[in-house]
Length: 238
Image (cartoon, rainbow, N blue to C red; front, side):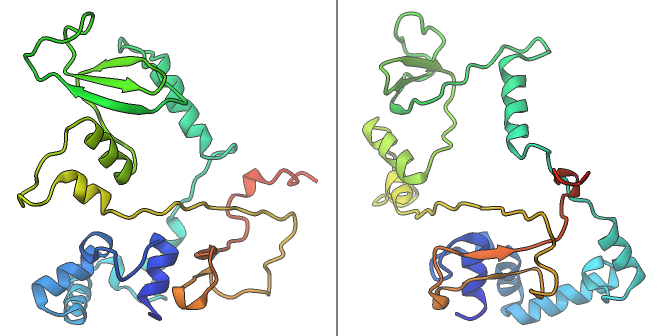
C-alpha cells in the first residue's frame, strides 16, 4: 500500500490489487517465474548487467553514466502534440505517393458490423467487401478488415449487437464477457507554465505519486521541471 499502490495509481492510473503484474511489471513477473523470488531475480539481473557493463549497474558518479545522462534529448513541438496529429492527417488525406487518399470521418460511431465472409455474396456496390460497417448517421461502409481502437466495453457492446460474439478457449466464457470485464480509466494531463522560476527552493525531487491512502483524488501524480522546453517560452526575448 505504501510502495506499489502510489506507483500504480500515479503512473498507470490503476488499482494495484486489480492490475496484471505480467502486463504492467513484466520484469518482476519474469524474476518471480524464473527464480521464484522477485528480490533474487533482481540481484541476478543487476549482477548480469554489471558483468555486461550495462548502464543499469553503474554508480551515480561513474563517468559513463554521467555521459549517458547528459547525452539524452527530450523533444516537443512548438504548438504541442497536436502538430503530429495534424501532420499525420494531412499525409493520409493527401498522400504524396501513389497511395490512395484516406477519408477521415468525424462525429460518427459504428453501430453494427456484418461479416459476409470471403466468398459470400454481398450488397450491391460492395462486391469486394468482407465486412459492412453501419454508422449511426445511416451510412454503411464496405471494408476488407476492421481494426477496433475503442474501449473494451464499447467493443463488447458492438460485437454483441452484431452477433459476433465467440467462445474463448473456455467454452463457458465468451470474448464479449472478457471484454466487458476489463476496467478502464479516463486520465487527463494538465500542464502549467510560469513566466518566473517559482519552483526554485520550494520543492525537492522531480515529483510525486499519490496513493489511495492519501485521499487526494482526483490528483494521481505530479511532476515538475525547470525550463524543460525553453524554446517555447513566449517571453524569452523580453
